[in-house]
Amino acid sequence: MRGNGFTTLWLLPILLGLMLLLLGLLARSEALRNSWYQQTVADNMASSAATLLAREMNLLAITNRALFANELTVAQLLGLASWFQMMKDVADRSAMASSWIPYLNAITRNIANVVQNIERPFYQVLQAVMYFQRMVTNALRATQWYARVGFAMTLPKTMEQIMAKHELPPSQRKWQLLHAPGIVPVPWLWWTYIPAQTSGSDQKLAHRLMLHSLDPFSKKRSYEWFDAVQIEVEKAGGARLQEANNGEWTWQSMDTVSIHVRGLLDSDEYPWGDGATYLGDEIADLSAQDFGQTSKINPTATKWGVSDQDSFAGGAQRFRYFNRESLEPDDWPSVIVVLPQAVAKAGVFYSRPSAWFPRADEQHEQANLFNSLWQSQLQSLSQFERTLLSSQYRYSHASF
Image (cartoon, rainbow, N blue to C red):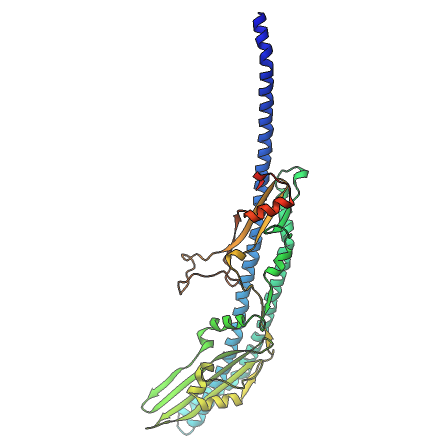
């Protein structure tokens, strides 16, 4: 009996040690669970912040495309106006030329009268649409500025809402949202990442993109109307975008039609219709390639068109939009969320799925702010970011 009591006495320290070890494991398990829970909260916050950045970039891309499309409307409206001017001349001269031909003279005169009667309401409608186009442009630009301010104000509110959805003690509810690599709080660097651009100071990027975006009607509407024996009726026309030194855009449009009578060695041109319109500065000079090569195809009719131009109210304006010249993968924006025991990083990336949105040229599309294809994803901290954050905050190595 004494031996059994003596053995039990020796077992007490062992049992005590096992109990302390068990308590330590339970405490460590609880701390680990809290750490993982904080990491989940940090991941959710970082992913949500990156999603907001991606949404803002997508909204800017959509509105940039809308601004270009709205600007293209100006070229189309001016094209309709110059084309109508040309057709009015064609109707009047056809009626004059056929005035001595019975029956035909009545038809051509009625056509000329109809065109003359609809001229005034036609131009009133075009002018109203032009004013409406300017209103839409101003609304789109205001939307972009509102988006920049609105998303910046939404970021901290969203972080607070996400934090409120998780059960964390008050001491662990402190958080910071930083620009990667983790020094400056969001959104201070975000304001300068996508600056406001203006034609005249963007190396003519918007001008080049606009020219590539022109539809076939605005770019060139030159073709042959008639060709028989020695007679050709040539139609020429198109729109032109001029950018002044101060960045103001001037839209111009011209349409001409002439009858060409071919001889043995040369041909004679008989102008039959011309029209020229502009928004901004009038047509002063033009090259052989301008307006669908009208000066080359119908040189005399082109001179007549230049001498009789119609101006649309509104004047030249600068093209304003938001864009960033360099959008290389290493420069894509990302954010870092810092909690007392956890850190998470998330950023945006650009991807165009070739299976869903294939390019006509089958080329890889680089990141840009004209297609809304930005997405968000969680990212790993770089070694530099780990070192930088470790020097600013006291974390265990496992937190990174």
